[in-house]
Image (tube, rainbow, N blue to C red; front, side, top):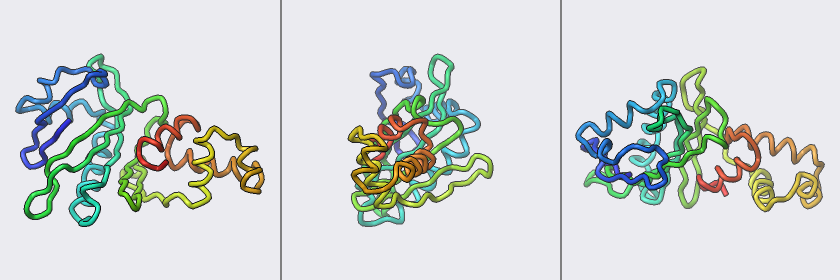
Amino acid sequence: MIWNLMTNRIVYTVDKRSVCGYDASMYLADTGMNFSVANIHPESLYSVVKMNEQGIKFLTAENKERDKTTVNLEGLYKKNTGQYFHFLQQSLCMQFDSEGNPFLFLSYIHDVTYIKKNRTANLVLTTPNRIKWWNFNFEKNYLELVQPLSKQEQKILSLLAEGKSSKEIASELFVSRHTIDTHRRHLLEKTNCIDTTGMITYCKLVGLL
């Protein structure tokens, strides 16, 4: 999908895998953005708006890496079947105006229903040199900044991605299996993923791996 922020129009969209299932004409019409927003679950709408605002704010303020920044955000969206799915939207700003404001975005949508926990949402901003990361608190309705992964967490995540068990990782890092399991649990909490397999998939998608 390509979205023009200045005109608030979707100018291109394709859904070959039927992730959403709607005809492209619904999005390309004058009311396309209204149609798209109307399909966001009411409980997710505020969080999606706040994550979009935070992403645009970062792109506006960031000068060096903003054209290489991926904005990863989540929410619940209604398919053409009437069922909601947990989506991951990954957006890149393709063009900035003369004043440096982002206005043309290329976005990809993934169905991550089966790897993310219910009533959770993350915002991950990935640049070549750093990562900014938030969880949306649905009880208090605000974005909570997440601490970046420590070197130990990054190492454990990489080893988990290689298919190694907690016992094997503990032996390699010269720590107890309990320590590895504790780190694994914290990683699952940070990413809001259902299990380790889903967490690895999610981390690869958003650039944490």
